[in-house]
Amino acid sequence: METYLVGGAVRDGLLGLEVKERDWVVVGATPEAMRNLGFRQVGRDFPVFLHPKTGEEHALARTERKTGPGHRGFQVHADPGVTLEEDLARRDLTVNAMARDARGHLVDPFGGRRDLEDRLLRHVSPAFSEDPLRVLRVARFAARLAPLGFRVADETLALMGRMTASGELDSLTPERVWQETEKALLSDAPAVYFRVLRACGALGVLFPELEALFGVPQPPRYHPEVDTGVHTFMVLEQAAALSPDPVVRFAALTHDLGKGTTPAEILPSHRGHEQRGVGLIEALCARYRIPNRYRDTARAMSRYHGHLHRAFELRPETLVRTLEDLDAFRRPERLDAILLACEADYRGRTGFESRPYPQADHVRQALERCQSVQAREVMADGFRGPDIRKEMHRRRVQAVGRLREAPR
Image (tube, rainbow, N blue to C red; front, side, top):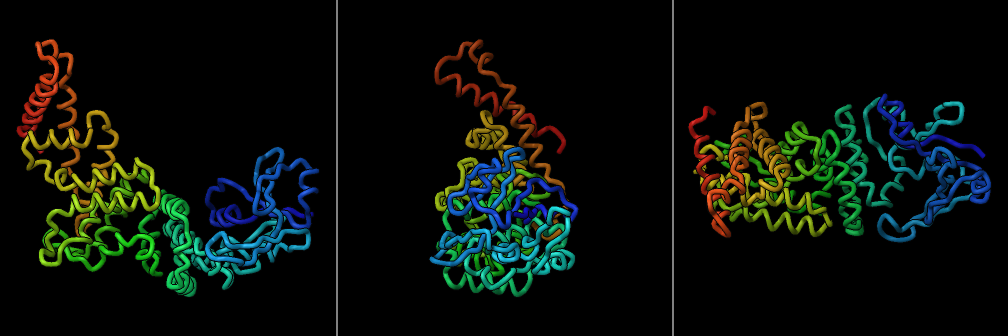
């Protein structure tokens, strides 16, 4: 029985990245032998065990055979005769198909170290195509490792394209699509995830609302990049630079979905796209069972980003109504997320990347003025019942009106 460190721990160690968790493969063992050593079995589809002291996962070496469609249609074979190389051969990318033995020696049968040096994400074998989830995983790895200069190998991208064209992605469950997408949104370069999906045709299959934005023109005066899809990915890049919050990034990604349904006769204008985008966001979030905090922030961003961009031009009454509609008095943290997404939207244009966005501070100051209006003071002045809310609104408008006199 021999134990090998495998997968991400080996890869990240060679890259000089922090190793957050370690996985192990055990060769030459049986489930009974593992249990006798104190390991606790947790795997149902194949034998996985938790170390009695460290709690780290130890899996018996195994092979897989495709028996049905989708990423669950596999028959697993694990016994003491399965070799380490056979186990590594079933993995997705060469950079994930390396191991270290007990002495620390690298086992690299598929050239993973060379691909690390060349900054390539390359599939191990044609068996890659048997699991459609790998299309998303490769895109996610590309997003995570893009800051280090990694790209998807041409032959792997072509294989991903053939997998997409075959219809295999239709078998992916909503939960797995969102799980991979959320991880990508947490990466340093989330736009790369969506660019890779688009390059292999998967964006149109999984996120047709985003694919529909490409080729849709915008007024060059305001959008020198013109193409709405290009703008959308630029906005996501800016959001990633401004905030690590995936909710902010999702709101930035989806804020212009309504432009994909703009009637051709009014292009390049996009009148009404804010409200049209709300329904598209709701449908997208329902399709992938995306948590409500993502949906609610993205929906508010789509509906109100135009108002917030014009914050200096809004009448105090309109600005206060906007804050009320956004529930900013009870949920100021969501307003902060929306303002960050708005800033990303403003900067996500060719030539605007480094420009200031004073509208955000103006809106925050307006909120502070509104918060200075206290219900107890209104009640102390004799207002009761529905009149309290009306008077608070009036005083908020009055307080925000004084901001017009402040320097921008």
